[in-house]
Image (cartoon, rainbow over all chains, first blue to last red):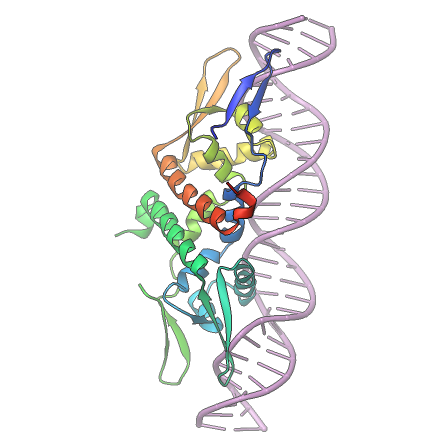
Length: 123
Length: 123
DNA sequence: CATCTAGGTTACCAAAAGTATACTGGTTGC
DNA sequence: GCAACCAGTATACTTTTGGTAACCTAGATG
């Protein structure tokens, strides 16, 4: 619904349809907006990746952050964690279907950012 | 490029094409990911809005936050600020073309979030 | 003259987010 | 036995973010 501001009989301005509910945009940002979250999903796009490999790919993020984000994403149903009974044991993370759709939207963000700062990401 | 992990001749694992540059997704999140930023852009989508009206629409955010976000968005060329020579003087904020394209992506985020939590935003 | 509006600013505080470094316990290869 | 790998934890610390509350100038209104 289109938000409006009206004046009441005393000339005081009021907003109708102000953000009364938790807004889906703010909520979505809480899930996908944390630092490194986008990068993690991005690196999972081609298939399952093991924890330490992910950590190597996103070398600038600490293991603590990687763990934290993965746990959070798992809780939201965006990634799955699977323990592989190898030796030594390994753990693989993958995108769920929900995670794959998030990827589409992350790609939109990527395109948007590249369009405004082409000099940084050039050709 | 598809990120990979390879083993060198000693069996040590290494990532190729790790996040060496600032990633456009992380950068974009810095611009659009702050709290209230999405809501502000959302409320500007139908045309210019005055500062206090915006503040009334997003009642849960303080004026300080609104100001801070607007300054940041202005610096990134996402919104414009125009002083209207009325009496009393007023200030109108609008989306730039760049801001309007961000709106497309925010709508994708909105749809994504609604799809995963339909019970919250239902019909 | 007191109060309302406009569009903010300032000072301060709490909590969240992020970084850095070290450590665990088990396994495999040299 | 020693080192390296696995998947993380633990602890301590700094930085950033978000939020509250009060205040400001200037013009209009009662």
